[in-house]
Amino acid sequence: MPSELSVMAAGGARREQGPAWIALIPALVTLGVTLYRIQRPSYNRDEAATLLAVHRSFPELLRMLGNTDVVHGAYYALMWVITRLAGSSEFATRFPSAVGMAVAAGGVTLIGRRLISGRAGLAGGLVLAVLTLAARAGAGRWPTGRRWRPWGWGTSSAC
Figure 1 (tube, rainbow, N blue to C red):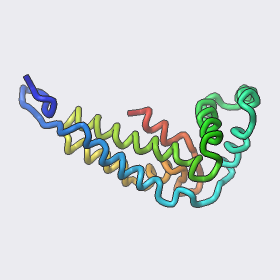
Figure 2: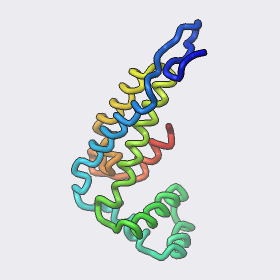
Figure 3: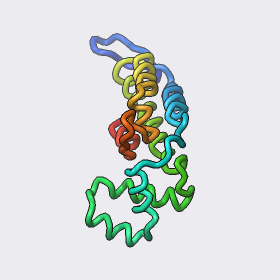
């Protein structure tokens, strides 16, 4: 019977998966990378639109969502709760995307660990952590200055 650290590969050879906690390494690195200067630059037009939406009452927000793209609904509902609990600072509103990217890096690590090996999973998670585009998008900032805030959670849900 194989141990939890190894699985049977094709052809009957065992391959080492490594411990599951290894996913914490890329997750924490990604969180650190995405939190770096998360409060800069100041809000842009898209973020201001989000703040205008979530500073409504919840019934008003639901009515507004009847006239906007459905893809924004879950994000606005999440941000509505976050602004009620943590305020509407740059940090508070960008933090969920940073966490989403950290979850994604941990997920990539676990997928790679299961499909190939612990080392491959760790490498994949760390690559996600240091990709400039992924890290900046997770913190809510595209290199071009454009934003798409749900990107971090969209990435983590893909895992």
